[in-house]
Image (cartoon, rainbow, N blue to C red):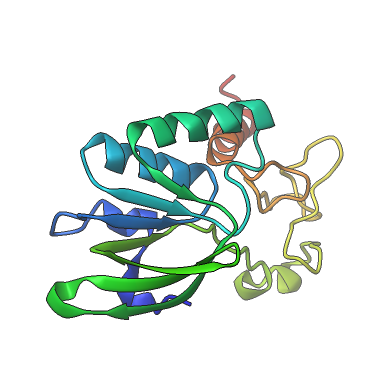
Length: 187
């Protein structure tokens, strides 16, 4: 468990007023791996921790190669890892207790970056009131011929909020561009 006041998101990372220093990146997806890689690339000590494996949504051979490259560059990767506790210690640093497999270990870092993804919340946006169909897990149900068009003709959704769409930022980005081009007839 990481108290929110002790951590930053990938968005926050780019507006820090101080050097991130030694960083624990929590997560195993595209953004977590990318952040771990560029932080190590600028010379920071980096731990990359996830409950399961890294880059699960990608081809397994490619994800293994990427993780091996990160390790060769000096990123300390920790799979099957859960955060047990995190607390502020002297000098603004954070002491983090990890359970790695059956072993418990403690590391001290300057920054904790949480990149575990975000949950969709169509109910919070009033999708029910608009008549948009979605699953109990918060995935928007698109149409077979146009997956980004919802059950309401003039309401669209792009990215991994749409049922059956891969949970990868570049896929969402490309979907958004294609939808905008199609809607505004700029192919």
